[in-house]
Length: 445
Ligand code: GDP
Ligand code: IMO
Ligand code: MG
Image (tube, rainbow, N blue to C red; front, side, top):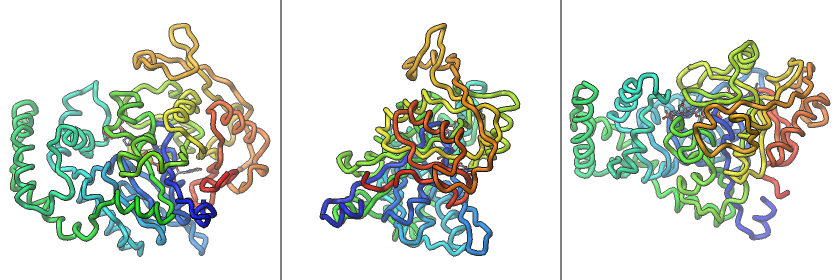
């Protein structure tokens, strides 16, 4: 890509998405690319995301960063982190994260926030929690961060945008309009106290001065960057099966976490996107409610949870665990137009006698090789497994594909065949360097 830029062709935008239900290791993959890209853009979601980046230190120790809202590019000094228009921003969390990183010596001064991003108002945090409680057994299992209600406001045209914070009069009008209905709902349906307009306005305004210098027209900024030949990495929060259109609705998040969302959430046109990298964990996890065909309720599930340290970064909930599902992998390839996969956490599968891969579903006695379009079918899909022989060797120090045990290589080649796109990199441990690169993720081939 760099060569292309030198030849005068504008460098394209690169999209990075999760292929499953989140927590595939997107943060680590973005961090890996950080030093080679000029901008990292978060284009959807908010602080429902949680990603952990582990950076080895020269003294042999390691630094661990757990982020929720800031793009992981913030950990790379040369790269400009951007919060795009498609994101919903909790300002308290934003500044808490910035302060936390500043205290650890990370330079956060380059952050740019879209003037069109929506703000998570305090009443939407309350509404997220009370609606979940109200749903009882039918709850979604949200992160309780106010994500769904804030996106609902955006679509209902009653949302508060970042730019509204710089005009007290407008802000008061908008909060007043939003609360006129929400207070009725809170008091009459949920038996909660009404929320005062002033309280909300003052809380939001308390962040305005600090926010102002970070705010800009991020679509214009990114377009100009692309015109100059800079590389822009668009990083998804959540993942394909949590996407509001293509996920396991209604057990999804409220934004477009697939590749298409990268354009609408950043203001970069589709013609600029030439590469889509999807992150696929070597097994499957899910947090919250909803169908999950390969979920394990036995010792194998416990093994994956324990060895993979599968506890939510955001809510601390134990993640539901199961075998790799390549029906989902194929679906992710198709929906996102994946050019390259990064298979993460292969090291977690070490020590298994046999490694099952779900290749298709059986639904009411019929084999399905593709994701069923009917949600009820997916709810009772039974996985059809193919079992591959496992490996016992420690792979955490492997840095080339050839160094991997033959059975691990065979496993990856079979996965590649089943998901229909190449596996360009393989994660073999949590650290920044614990990765095998087969094809340069930003390279021209
Ligand atoms: P994200 O939400 O997609 O960014 O992923 P999370 O950070 O929530 O979850 C992935 C977890 O796996 C993090 O704790 C990472 O440090 C860890 N991780 C990422 N890649 C690997 C890998 O290849 N091997 C192992 N063992 N851990 C990994
Ligand atoms: P990252 O970026 C895993 C899940 C929640 C819940 C559903 C809706 O770390 O991969 P929401 O609060 O978004 O309305 O909750 O989506 N969820 C995630 N699960 N990883 C995430 O983000 C998630 N973000 C939301 O658990 O089931
Ligand atoms: Mg996560």
